[in-house]
Length: 200
View (cartoon, rainbow, N blue to C red):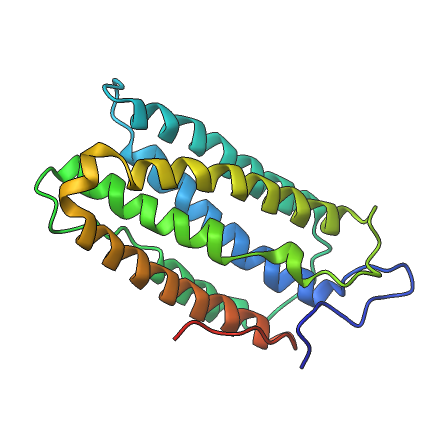
């Protein structure tokens, strides 16, 4: 087991097996975010945070499109049941302590998005000797850059005035989501020979 991708091929590229597993996980997570952002949006925007949701739908879709095209795919027989477990984990989880259902759903979604964008750092798995011009490596770096930008918006919303009365509930939801996603990410990587520290 290694903490990084590899062994790299002669061109300094990540093995297709590892590319496939990582891309499948990321597409599943970011696809769930895109769907949930789209369904959380009202027909008419009434708040500033709803405007940001609209922007995030398109950024998540861009990440998916990038991965689909940049990944060297190969068959992975374990993806069927793994994807089912991932998709189940992504189910919406509104924060029950918030009486406004729309705000509760948005806060739960922001906690999920925060865990994905802060907890999953695929570019950190690239060895120094990885080919900087490889499309997959470039895609991972781009995703990590975009995740940093998206994360700032989620932090602003989760710390915003609408959620101040529910700070403890929001913090608990964040902790649950981070623990859950860290575990799934670690399990996905272990199946292709990569080990990372887990959040317990």
